[in-house]
Structure formats: C-alpha cells, structure tokens
Image (cartoon, rainbow over all chains, first blue to last red):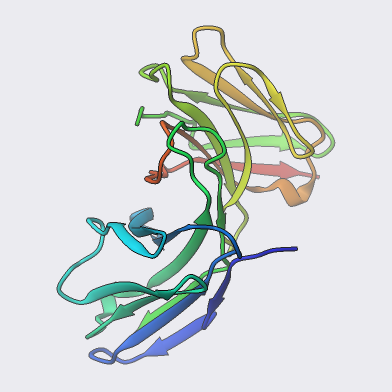
Length: 117
Length: 109
C-alpha cells in the first residue's frame, strides 16, 4: 500500500532554531505539494514541485521558508529562523496531475506537527 | 478555479445516507469537481471526482447537476468513522488546489 511518509511527526523547537521537515512521495509520482494547516487559516498551499522543479512557491514566506527536492524520493521544507507563528501542521502530498483536469487526486502524508516556543 | 460553497456543518445518523451539498455556480466547462475529507489529526484523503457524469466508487457517490452548478457527495451508509471535514474543490487540473473551509460532518450513534 503506497503512502506518502513524513518525518518528523512532531517537532517542538525554540524560536530562532532551524527546522527541517522531510517528505517521501509515493514512488512514481512526479508532483509534490507542501501545505500548512492552522485553525485560523485552514489548509494553505505553500509550494509545489513537478519533476523536482519548483513551479509555484507564492504561498510561502520567502524570507524564512525554503523548499527543495534533492531527488525524486525526497522533498524538504526548511524554516530558518523559526517563529512562534510558524506553529502549524505541515502536510506533504504527491500526485500525477494531468493538465486536462481529470485524475488529479493528491495523496497526503500524515503531517508534521510543529510547535515553536 | 471556481469558488465553491459548502455548509459549515451537518449531522447524520449512523447507518443513514449522508448527503453533502456543494455549490459551484461559476464552474467552467473544463473544471472537475473533487472531494476530499480530513479525519481529525490526519492528512486529507481523496474521495472521488467527476466532470459531468455521476460517479461512484467504493467510498461514495458523486451526483453533479445537469447544469453543473452544484453537486452532492453521498455516503450511502454513514458510520462513526465518517465523521470528518469534507472539502469540495473545483479546478481545471494541473497542480494548484485551493481548499476552502469544508463541511464538518458529525455522524451520531
């Protein structure tokens, strides 16, 4: 049963520290998405990659957030320096979207719950 | 992508059908309707999608009106495990998916 995996599942850190979240997409999926979820804002799209290239990171605060795909099996989301307002659940999702619109379902990982003190 | 409107919450009795409505009156001809759900503390889960024909899979049925301005997700025999937030999304495909607030479904024993 293919699944998206994310590590760590929980992270507690202090303000100013660097945080790295990792995602392993489903093998064969060429698109990876990063989302952030808070009670106030709901589920927000931060960035997404296709074939390891960033397509859109307009939802991501540029000064402290960065997202990369070092290879097809690993996506990372880094926050440096972290701030209390970054506390949220961060989800990674993968898929094989088609521009025609059908078969664009995304498969989500279990999320990383980040708490910045 | 077309804006979608869903009721903020709904109740359903266990064993009964849960019918979750979604309004997408500005949907364009090439936009699909997708449904996801999110059970507490888990990542969203894809349920079903359709363009204009009704669709059914092992999880649910999707009924899209003839004018495509609204749709209904049907869980035929709701169980307590179906308690979740259900998201209706209309988009043309490609990559960007915008999630709204969804409908919080409470299935009661």
